[in-house]
Length: 412
Image (cartoon, rainbow, N blue to C red; front, side, top):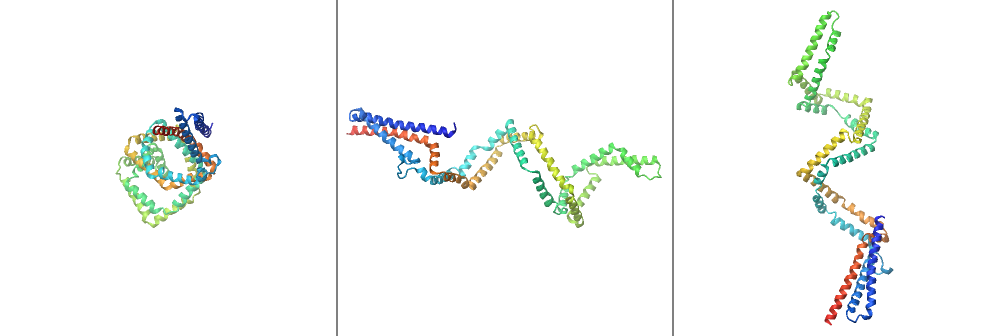
């Protein structure tokens, strides 16, 4: 049984109960009418009479909300069918004023302590895994929506048209100059020198063979061998010295070279022309665009594989990060206040900017209903409670009638 059918059943039962009380009062009135002037029966008869009056009056009031009582088109009856549009606008104004007011929304969000509750929830491992699974689902959905040709077209537009069409000299020079001045390239130099030393230590025969191949034909072989081994030893020693000494003259020479190169890129027109020529060759090379498409395909496949596998390193790292953030959020009151303030500001912005559009749904929905449909819908939701008015009217009317009759007897 659906919800509406349950409401209909409950409404019918309450209507039957209220009507039964009216019928009971009428029955008592009829049975005691002949003896209303004798003793206590008069009290009962008067109470029953007053109960009928109260029951009928409240039946009229409740019925007049939804339809014309007994089909009689009495003024100011069938209020909901005839004034539904006005009621919809009034309800809209009421909701906008008292429920979607900025101060009300801010107070509600502040009392909710959203940041703290989210932190406590996310600090649990199971909840962190669930949140990560939802994020993975969103990522998977985004990848499904994104078409490869669309992404490649965007990369082509952003990378090739906006980046590769601009002059490279000055910005590249500024970037390189900043890197050199900050010493950010030293780690890369360390790696390069270390790899060079490792390679040299393992390939002595290569260096010796190069020397032998370039030696004059008239020199004796034993001399070429000695020169080759000496050249290898000097190269290995030089690489070891550069690797061990962070202030080696070769490192300083490289810094000076990079500094001059950065300066020329910014101020030397000839160097700027060379940089732009290199840019043009890169832009016009057919393999570059294909490499971009292949790079996106590879990245997409890697992301899909990572988000689909709960045991992947990406998923597990994300779970750890989410759980760590939740633990911190649950304990850091300053962070909670900051995030709660953001939530309050966001909710306030929504209600102040879009309140009219939100509450308009009420009046527009009511306007789409015809009068009878609106009456049925509203009665189905509130009619059961309104039947208590009829019940209370019957009981209260009987008690008031009894009190009035008692006072009349006492004062008569």
